[in-house]
Length: 267
Image (cartoon, rainbow, N blue to C red; front, side, top):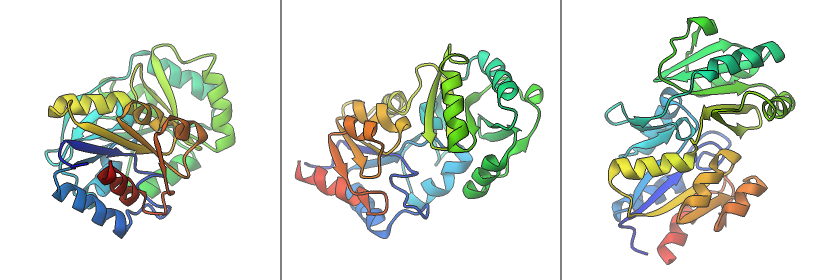
């Protein structure tokens, strides 16, 4: 297949990034070769602006990206949102309910380009350290109500399991919940996913007639993989993600992007 009119969108953590949170030299070379032949490459991540920028800059991504698990399309070159959704008013009530039920829960609110921590714990501290982000700490009642893009719940995998069960019976009307990692559970606006974000990006950039490729590993990648022309799962992906994919490549430590690009070229 000619790479012109092909667009690849990939998840970062657990997919393009290896366990050291790096892009392999082999993958970076494959991406650059793909783009030199007319292909378009971008990312879809649950990360917000500050958390994604370092990786996006390393990749020298030259088109907008899907961030906040589909809640926004952001142009890192121009530092501006092309489109974004917004959390409903009930999100505040849900946060209060969860804090009463799980007092030691970690809660981050991603608002615009800010990361606001309204309930801290060890998992949140680890998250901030890994992403090299300095958050703003404030009480839930102090947080301005506009431009909430998502809410991230952070705790141990076992406690997140309990939160998932609780949310299944409460705190779910008007929002979409998605697990983005064993220690993270995220509240998004209703109808929002990486799949809907991919569609918004294509519309915003006038690329709706492109052949779409999407790769990922976790539940928050499922919709994007399922709806792309070529959905790809890495070998370390969850079983449900693999079931949605048309192609399975090596794991995130095996330069999977080079394998994906090689496969496209043979189509």
